[in-house]
Length: 266
Image (cartoon, rainbow, N blue to C red; front, side, top):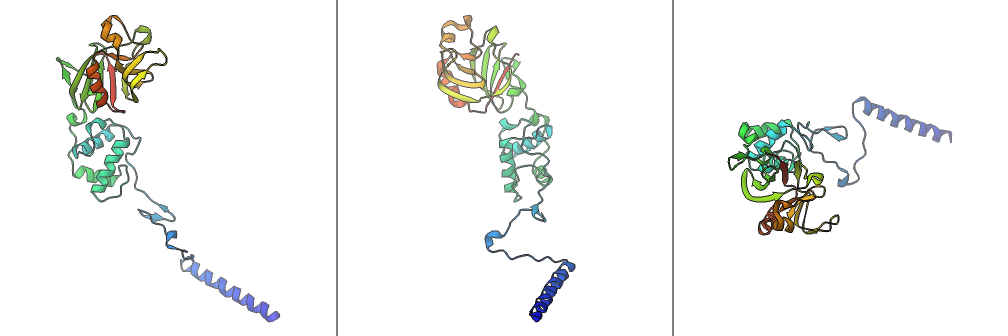
């Protein structure tokens, strides 16, 4: 019995000495993975267990003129449509960045790091002022709101009572429109089409709102039979009324959710 105890003690000392020797030489003892599924693959340099990703200069949610410059370069490469030249790093800009990164064989991060910026600058030119801020369209000798100069917009001028459907600075369609009364004024500002309803009926006023394109709460661009019948003798409850039924049918099919709606006074 005594011999067995001594033998176990010696075995334990030898095992301990082996571990100390491994640690002293800078090596660590690790168990072999039980299967290939235990192996970890990371795309970049590894420190311990965590991958180190390149620093983001601009990413989803970033805003500002530098984002606009990146977008302008992506427009040059036809990876991004002009409508998304808006100072905001959103889904479409992210997609365009990933397409560029894929074309250059670099990691598809979906954000702009220094490596991506360097490669992007190498194949594009410095955006001009006109590329960054395209001039506003001119109609009947008057400039439209500058926000209507890029992308797709329903550009609505309360002063001239006109709605212009503008694509990349070109006026495609024009409509007579009327607005809300004093107590139910049509809101002014920059909006986007939130949703569309071809055969909408207002639950609040129990009135038909065909071809409705909502942009601000319950306010929408839509056809109005009352406007067609009475003209400017009446007013809406805040919506932008259109009286040309055949034209708004065409407009409804052209406008997409997310398109800009600019309501302003010239």
